[in-house]
Image (tube, rainbow, N blue to C red; front, side, top):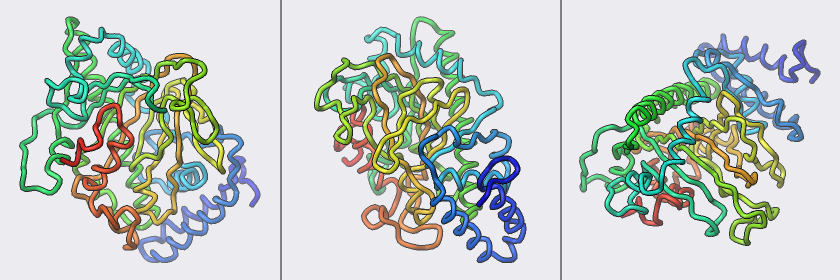
Length: 380
């Protein structure tokens, strides 16, 4: 298909989807058919050689229903597995980066006071809080500080399913407490606000996916999102040659973040740092940084829930021989959300063994967060 007047190869499909979207309430099958045809066309037109063509969608355009924006999201989620959101009101990437660097520059004994229990047995927090970088034990090499949606200590209910994991999903945030009270207050206020901004974007993405696949109730699976996490990350540079443990088995690249796929929706700030790579056709390609906006990608569960009509892209972070900073935000379903069926009622691969999201996380999270969690941290 020839490009439209804006040079966009899916311009005509956008026009068609606008028309079909208006008729969707009266002809849902027609709407679904148009979506599928759009998907089939664009997955055969993908050129992964230049990821600079990935859409940059304004915040105000994705927050409200917009068929033209929905079509861009669908195209990029099928072709690349991610897109960008830009021009976010009241979001200050420079301020977040400044505070992010400052917290990791604090003395080790200060950071130890708000470390997770794996690194400070005197603390109760298991997943929210600080974790130090541990070198030469694997491909993951990062300092972390996790922030969740909860500010009160949860009650422990031994009678509930997966009671330990459920309790951790709701654990109270642990904030830095230093001699600089103005920093402490600014840090907490800035990242609490940043958490809320990212939630609004993630919900908009879920609503967009719900519209695309005629499943407006999809957002109901995310009502509580107890495990949602804003993750501050510092990736220190490694020794130049690395070791067998710190290199990719695929191409021998020295890494600072392991090769993995995410869970549901990720809203990522990489600022102007290179290093993020995504896997296409058996090789990793450099992903352009997010700048002052966000990179949005989906995880394996949403791929399952949409019957594989959008993709979760495998990715990693290579060592860039200098300190690298990033902030991923992971927006997750409610602990008891059903993940056993897709938007079309089909059984999902994940749901065969773990029908609820909380159950699934007991297996997934320790594997991707070994710095913070023991293998049995969520399963006791």
